[in-house]
Image (cartoon, rainbow, N blue to C red; front, side, top):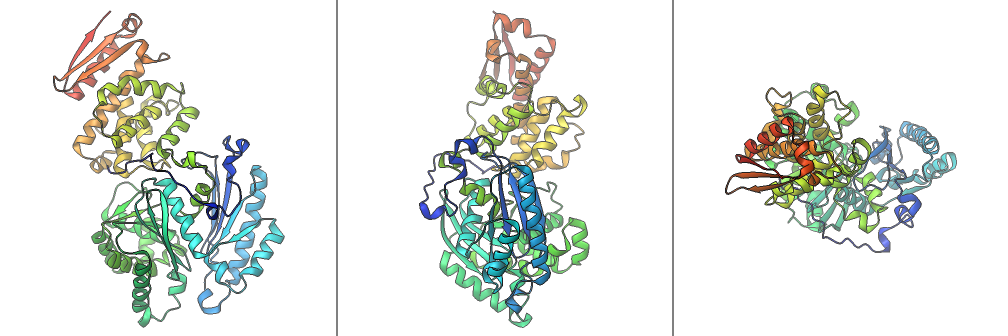
Length: 516
């Protein structure tokens, strides 16, 4: 579990980092969980995303994509795809009307490689603005790289390495370190462009281009973050080859050797069959053969230790652009859990008090574990509406598949096991047992202890559990002591006593109760 949030990194950008005017969230009326809509007009797809407010962890209120193929054939003709133009304009008319119906502020619309490179791009921009009322920002490759990098930082605050964003007609690289975006570069390594390169020249063309990119951004990056649909399709195929149990692409991690094996495996299999097995669209799968050649060369030249998938990119980068500095510094996981507690729990605010109550058990926890303990306490009561027979399973399923940032796959399972044990003493015969191998036996035991501590602490559902009792844990003496108050003695019934004994057993400690 290496995804450690660092909260002491200041991020300071100059005026050039704000091309769209005053950040929306600096307006107090906009900070009150208003909705923010962004549109990304790409070479392959046109997408509108509406984020539900200024939360540090993005909540997707609305998300719609049209695979318009606007940039298909651009390298050959120099013009946008005629059918793609019609489909893109139709989608944007719909998006403009949806935004009005949702009563959100002006959509922030950016267009990337296809519209900036096509000779009829300016003409389409004028037509869109005339017929929809939207304002389109056609950004250059370096701006595209920056927005993609900011999207990764929004969902992955401690990102250190090289962001690689592939679209239909271009591929951008950006360096991130210490919460800042560094060197950036753009190229024409998008699959639509590569389709126009003669097959006999393709390998040499990719090698020469990647070599030049490496010269500009350096090769000292231990980690590459992949952004873009073609990369996600390859990652999903890697999951299929490995029979990986958790089909969550964000923070899915691959090694160079695994990527090499997957590229070989894709080449040996029928793409249509793989598409059916992974649920990948035909339009997306058609780009994979070119994207995987680029990825193979990137790994060969940059030699990263790890390759990670980011579900966040340019659209999330546009949201990050609008965030004030104080919001950027917050932990996305904790912010998301706070929002869940405030909207879904029976006693909002109790999670913080529960955390204080059980904290003595975890006094020696490392920072990366401590934030998971905080997150679990905030989420401990958010599935109470589920039928009691299924609450434990609902907890696990929700957190392992939730749209949460700054959370690795092992950390998802750790939280899932903790929340499962918040509602259930045993995980025997769990339908999620196939996921348990994603964490170590030590982490499994810690998660069980955390769950049983929350399960016990919830028995004192007063304003604060500390009104009823205090916990004292001495691991070296293997002793767990509960000091009851007068009020707590009346609350400490036989169910609470059984849960306390179960917690002590999970710790390998002797339970002791001190009564007033």
